[in-house]
Each structure stands twice: as C-alpha cells, then as structure tokens.
Image 1 (tube, rainbow, N blue to C red):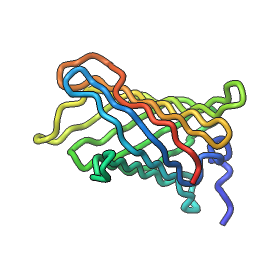
Image 2 (spheres, one colour):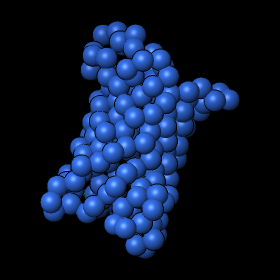
Image 3 (cartoon, rainbow, N blue to C red):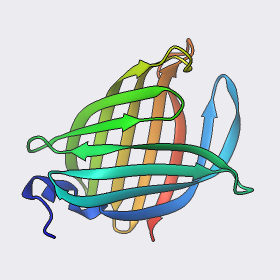
Amino acid sequence: MDLSPALAPVAALVGTWRGEGAGSYPTIDDFSYTDEVVFTDVGKPFLHYVQRSWSPDGTPMHTETGYLRIPEAGTAELILAQPMGQTELAEGTVTAEADALVVELQARLACSATAKHVDSTRRRYELAGNTLVTTFAMAAVGQPMTHHLYSRLQRV
C-alpha cells in the first residue's frame, strides 16, 4: 500500500518508537517511565497514532489513540481520545529544522464530567535520524501551561 501523498511531510514518523521518559508537574511527584509511540499507515490520508507508557516495574501508566492529519502543506492536526475522559483537537505545524522533522501542536480539550480538568496542551515531536524526542506541556487542575513530559525514543 502506498502512503497518501498528503502524508509525505511526516512519512518518516511511520513505525514504532520506544524509549525512556521523565515526567513532572507542580501537583505530583516526579516520575520516570518507558514510552512507546506508534504511527501506522492505514492507506488513507492520515496516520493512526497510539501512545502507551509503563512504570519502571512494567505497570501500565497511560495510553491514548488518535489520528495525525496533514490537511495542507506545513500544517498538522492530531485528534486524540484518552481513557481518562479527555479528547484533544490539536492543531499546529510541520517543519524541517536543521536536519529534523518537527511537529508542534496546541490543543483544545473536552473533558467528561468525571475527568481531571485540562484546559489545553502543547505537544512537540522532533525526529532526527532514528531518534524521536517528544515533549508535552499542559494547563490543568488550576496550573498555567507547564512542562509535564519528555521522552527520547528510538525506532524499534
């Protein structure tokens, strides 16, 4: 199956990425985790996205799933669902910066009545060679936009 021409700017993301991460936020203790991100070509003009993480002892921590779309040159959309009651509609850019592919996204969220309240998120995916670095910030539970997660992943 051929990759949709619309996905050419992010074709290098297709695959499975795994590595170590670290998290912090003003309302919780710092923590480490193993992170896995998978971008799958499904033969349509979007990539299926799945993220999963585990604690150092192997206990599942988080997962989310969605779709990465490139609606026009230089733009990106990531539509996500999370099992804790949030959905994200993230919009941003796709650029090439000094031998790296960079996807930067800012999201609006909808939260169920029982979910922790998250106002907005900011994500960055930076791919250089076979290393994918992810960063995630959020404005949540009364805190302003604050760094939350960092992971450094290798192609599996």
